[in-house]
Image (cartoon, rainbow, N blue to C red):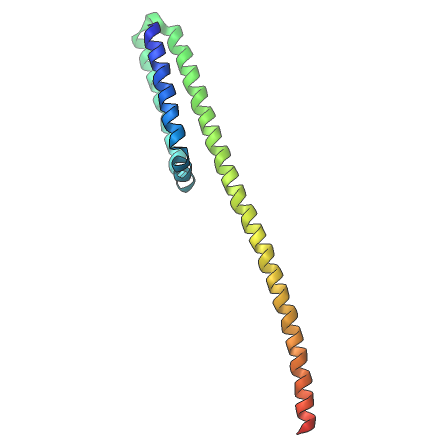
Length: 135
């Protein structure tokens, strides 16, 4: 049983290492498909609880182990879910910040155009006066 636990932990570490290699692609996928990812986490929580019930009632001799493993897996899944939500929040915050900077730049440009427009209208009226008197 001890060797099986070590193998499970090693498999988990290998999965984490693979996940670290593809993190950027996964993050981008998550941001583009956030509702889908919420659904995946709900299904993952369901599967964990279902497996827990199956293991808990099928192998009575190791009930304490199954309880410990389900607590660890649910806590880990909740932490990953929190991490993904934080990543989504940070990503959206960067977009909002970028949009606010762009909005300020556009408002400044509009203000400059309005100022230039007023000057051109003033110049136009002045030219009309000059041309009107000359004719």
